[in-house]
Image (cartoon, rainbow, N blue to C red; front, side, top):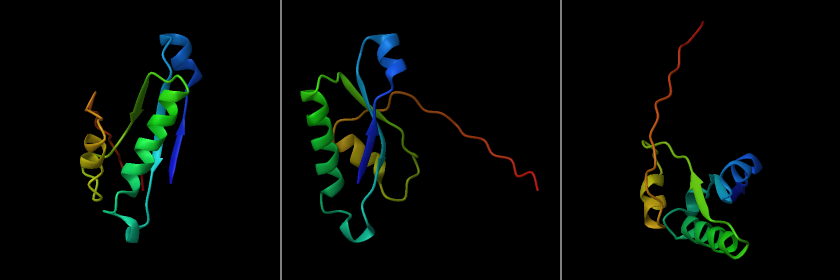
Length: 90
């Protein structure tokens, strides 16, 4: 599956249409078979045909599913990195 959306505020602020890919997932049995690659390429092709200018997504750099390699394989490059903090309150 692939879930994506467009943020109207980004378009209004920049004048560019951005396809934000919120989630890409395949069942474990379907991994390493090109399914996620096909989903991403199809979504970006459809977005380009619909007038989108760019695509973006976020990923955990330590992903156990090798997601970083997948995204780089279809042409994404690292634009920024960030750190998340957590504190247990119990």
